[in-house]
Amino acid sequence: MNTDYGVAGAQLPSDSPSPTNPAAEGLVARIEIDQGGLTVDLTLDIAPGTTTALIGPNGAGKTTTVNALAGLRPIDSGRIELAGRVLDDGSAAGFIAPEDRRIGVVFQSYRLFDHLSVIDNIAFGLAPTRRSRRRARAEVAELVEAFDLGSLTNRKPSQLSGGQAQRVALARALAIEPDLLLLDEPLAALDVATRSQLRRFLAQHLARFAGPRLLITHDPTDANLLADEICIIEQGRVTQRGRPDELRRRPATPYVAELVGTNLLVGFNQGGTLDIDGADHQLQTADTSITGPVLITIAPNAIALHPEQPHGSPRNTWLTEVESIEPLGDTTRILLGGPLSLVADITPASTAKLGLAPGSSIWATIKATEIQVNEHARDRGRGIDR
Image (tube, rainbow, N blue to C red; front, top):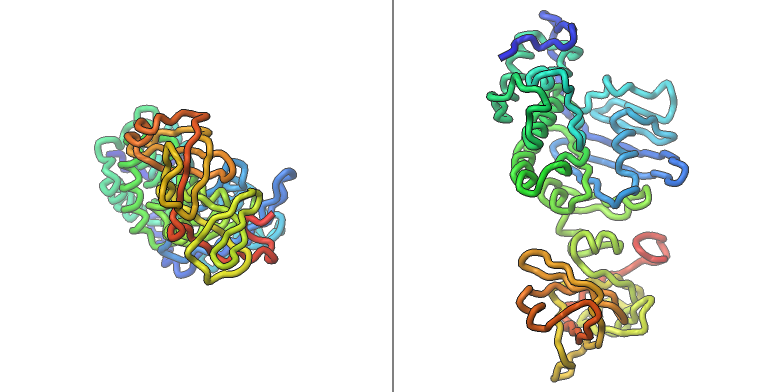
């Protein structure tokens, strides 16, 4: 094993004291950046020992947020504070350079140094940290063992698989004992099988990191399995935040509803009769506790499909048309057209039995008890009200 843990001629002070990093405080950030076509204006608060996933569609402002936190792009106004230290307050005097921020970053492309071995990639950030050489050796050795990289220490990045490169990138990020672990789409470049394996590995090591962790992703599976809280960003602003189960129960925007696999409608509830915004159709709900504007959530598997109008006069029945069919393994997702644009999840066997194809006419039914409503405060200018 290579024991020279300096890089490119850098030397570690042999008698320098080791810095302490109790991660006593987390991340508190208010980021305001004008990108021309997009204004990013959001707040992030992440406590030590917790993981927040920032998730949103392409162009929502995720990359801008990463660049601001990492120091690759100064904020126009606001304040970024990490572990009690101000990293950026919107002024040139208050801007801390990336190398002085104590942030461990794992990028989607990993950004390993091609000319360095695995061991030297992991040790790269240690030279400026005032560790003793003995401590640096011990910590790198611990990381090599923890990430199962012992047989790879002398390999170059070009000789690594995607999963191996991801482990090296994570080890390198943790080597500097960062105050914040910033993971920018860390699993996106992996194939499905490797992603599943590395997701479990990542969850294990995130739990061992005492500081705040921010996961940037577009994959709801990553967010659900790795994060304590999910923060949804759309068009530069946070539209919803909460635990994964809270988002599933009460999605606040159509994007969130699609993300968590729930149909979301906006309407007005009067005694259990729902007038749906933008649709000439009513639904009946068993919930009469709310009178006024509501957000309506319907699970895709709560929608039943029939080749003919069902008998028994279900309270919610309508004739619709199949717009598209998407196989999802053990489930087939059916996109329904008007009068209500909804998705229904049924089994592949049911899809075949019904003979469904795009353009097919089909009857849809929903039990009133399966329709959930939540108060929608339209006058607050939030959520999906337009």
